[in-house]
Amino acid sequence: MTHIRRHRRSIRLKDYDYASPGAYFVTVCTYNRECLFGKIVDGEMIFNESGLIAVGEWKRSSTVREEIEIDSFVVMPNHLHGIVIIKEKNEDSDVGASGRTPLLCGPAPKSLGSLINGFKSSVTKRVNILHHTPGAPLWQRGFYEHVIRDTDNMNLIREYIITNPARWALDRENPELKT
Image (cartoon, rainbow, N blue to C red; front, side, top):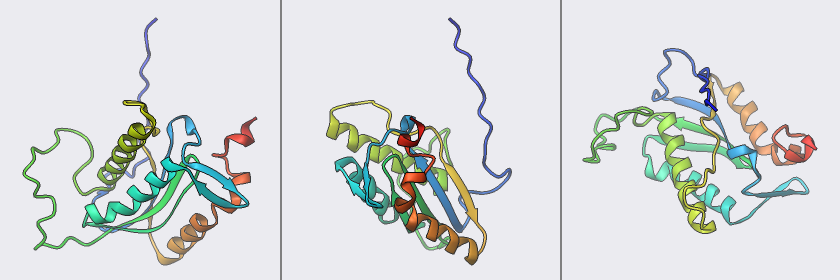
């Protein structure tokens, strides 16, 4: 049987530089939307070990990537919502001078895509070590992003993130709704 490979349509803004300073709302979903990070109890997220890894790695992102700042975020049973701020470039900074050979493909260094790839990779590695499942997929391919354009939009998204666990019973990502 021949496997037909379909070309996925990009949801990215054409000609937009996702390494440019600004605020971005991102959503990253687990592979097959499996609930891998814990469960919601009475509107509150209760993390398992994998969920604690995801939270820790997301928080650590701004430590290992000087060019970004992590704003509001929530790790849900099968996805993460977060606001990422890419800061203005500091011309005196030597961040990124790693001495390694540059990647031949993939997202641009210091871009939103680079951050998400690094986050997914580190969480996947640690969770697979925890569960003795080397090579098992943890994340869906790609991620959702929205360029935050103003303070009102930022505040609406923050509210959405903060209240997300309380709305889990109605969330389209909740697999219990699909039965």
